[in-house]
Image (tube, rainbow, N blue to C red; front, side, top):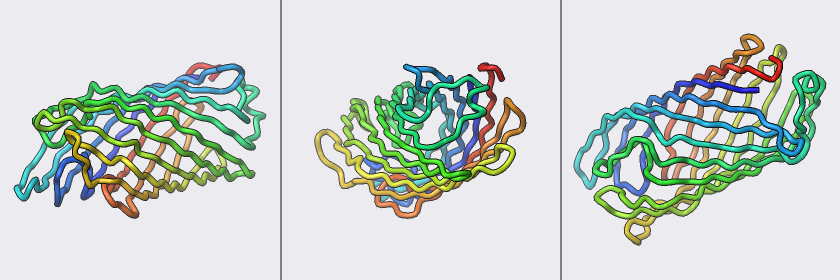
Length: 267
């Protein structure tokens, strides 16, 4: 089965920029559109998936930099992301007819995502849409079903490459960011489902030309998702999230809407 996903989103908050940049009193709004393609795979008899995400963003806002007011208004493509996900236990590759009789119990799987540093980036500017560096993100997760309820737990690490052309021609390094997430999902009738999410992120301390910054990230976020099918091929998903506690980094609110189209695999 193939998936095509198009989505739009909105975020606004006090901090939506690189924590290595010494900005204060920031108020930045981001409008995001994304196009994603995913394909379901059979790897060694287990279900797997490959996906590609291409984001496009419009960013504008104001902040203070070393006590002076600055502003930014920019649009462009972000860094595209590639990911391979695979289940190791509990989710064999099935045909559409076989899947109709499948019952979710315990599933264990993992994924590896790579971000390509080809998005919009200007080293003379404080805030950009792209990051001008690679990153890889391995994740491990599990889910357990109880009737209409499903509990999902995952952990991962985002490992960054260097940005050798950071603001002012500096070299930027960043320690890995470690993440822990949980999702409580409830399946309603007619294929509708909703989920509550809690996430915690820590790490990510930076170095600029070898000088360590005081920007260790420790952030907690909560969110909610509601998805409903329109027909066999189309579905819509609404999601929102907000920061609960932020030391550095992800103090913002988001709301988004996504449309998904499926084809192939006997649909």
